Image (tube, rainbow, N blue to C red; front, side, top):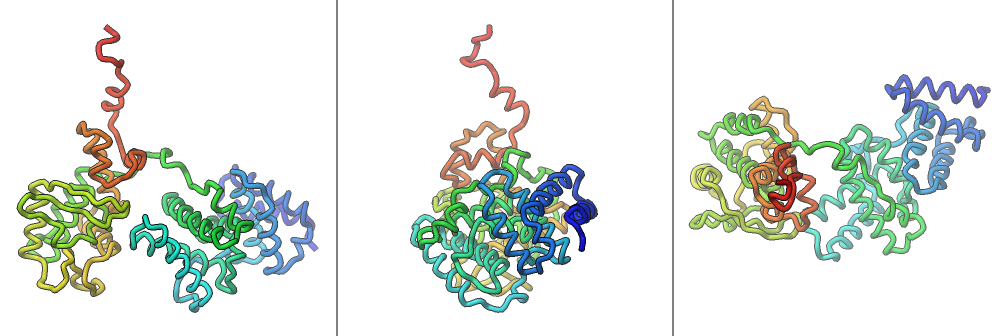
Length: 398
């Protein structure tokens, strides 16, 4: 039988072969060595028994910033032993319908709706992300009492490996909300630590946010064939996001009645932030929108402004996902790397600030309830930072 030293040596070889840096290998190796020293029986346990032991081990770790490293390391050890991922990526066809999870998600959605400040789309998206987590982690038998810090950390480390930091941060927001729901249902001991722990990825300030370059935006506009109905639609949607800073969900929810054609004002309602706002349209955006409404939009009973066409799924209006998909196709045709529709929104925000607009004004245009939210969008140029650092009051240095 292999000794503890043999297991630790095999583990170090395994994690190094999987592309981890020397520093990361040292971190994981030390934690697995500690784990095996405390639980030598782990070297002889079968797959299910070892997984249970690992879960118990992680749950007992104090809530500190080092928990994720330890959790990842001991799960890596399980993966080395049995040659399987700790948890599978979610693919609906791999999971038969679990009535317990479906009922749980319905109750969670009702809870979110009862809060009164979340849009229908936000409730839908948040519930679906939690549903994915529950199916991946508890497909063999769901019980809300099993949802604990260890299961969340396992999902972050394995179920979301390879995903961007922003996607992981988004899940952390959803799962904290779900944890608060569980606490309200009496699962204080198991779910309480989830709702209290600061489960974030790299801080937003670690890097400047992605903004589309002016030349790339111009290339996307130039690539659209405005002689076709779809081209007229895509140009109008692109300009609403790239000139006015609308979210793709805002674009999808627009109705014909939201456009004040006489005064050139666009009314954005039912937004993600629940803040209705009115935005004056520039001439170029207004003309693109008018061209689509008069010459590109098919006749329909729907009052939705933007309608699906071609191979897109049929429905009475474009969905947020279809808006994003249409923009990705435009970027591919233009030969531009697609960084998501939010890169258009961020570029609008940064352009306004660099042009001298007050932050509060930019927040109002974007529909942000907090200026702090607007700040993370901005890519402010060096000259504006220099001016911001000038002596105050003016002339004090003379």
